[in-house]
Length: 362
Ligand SMILES: [Zn+2]
Image (cartoon, rainbow, N blue to C red; front, side, top):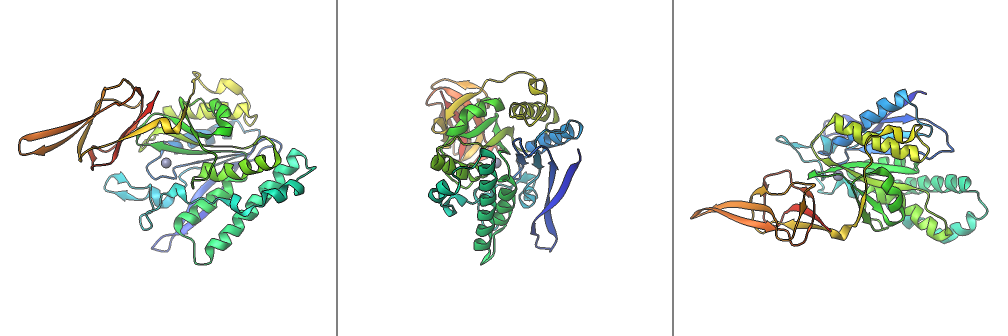
């Protein structure tokens, strides 16, 4: 099997040069689930590129049974957004919009009641093909509608990626957090399936649209499955691979192994459980249980707990240091409930009110 390489145009720079992303496709049987994996939508979140590099090499030697599309470094503008040594790649520099909030809710354009009649008597395969075609047509219509007065960079980028991702049955959007442990966002309908990803924490997110790729991909199918009273056939997750500003090849090999094992369970990859090392038990939590402690004052942060550590009520999480007429002045942030530290900031400087540490309350 050959790897199909296609550069996809995103937008042009102020100097006129055009920016592209690299799409790699390994074509397999159309009877098996189609997979789409992208990485690095937020500029500093690079570890997913390392995972895609592992997957490309694996598939070159061991072609997948189903079709797999991989796009690393999906946001050329965001990745190049440097401020000194820091990568400021989460928000568009001119518009201020989060890059992961410009996907489109095409469910609003579809008459689901009308589909009950249109799709009656179709086989699952026919229904799948018809609905995917309808999604692509809806995205094309949305592009035309939004283009009347010109598309923003974020709309241009997200429409391009959504059109690619919406061809798939399994969508993995690879992100990272600041200083963080691995976790997955999964909607209620796919919580049990998400355990096959073997990430330590799964956050349950509502089945509604908030502008992110995972929601943009599953919402049309959520509405269709409700209208037709059928199980939802797609899976769409945001995977948080740990810390940002990181390319760790050995960690990527382990994370790639878990993704391959997950795809083996879906029949897309041959080999099954031989593809990963130690099994990881997943803990499922409501997103509301994740509490983000904001700094009561501005200053320099000293952390007393690391991501992955357990905390008890009253444990010191962090101190915020600054100076006044008497010298050093420190404010403490203590745990209000017991739990697991999920993430803290990468920076040592915080303004008053910033979210400095995140604890999953257990
Ligand atoms: Zn992200």
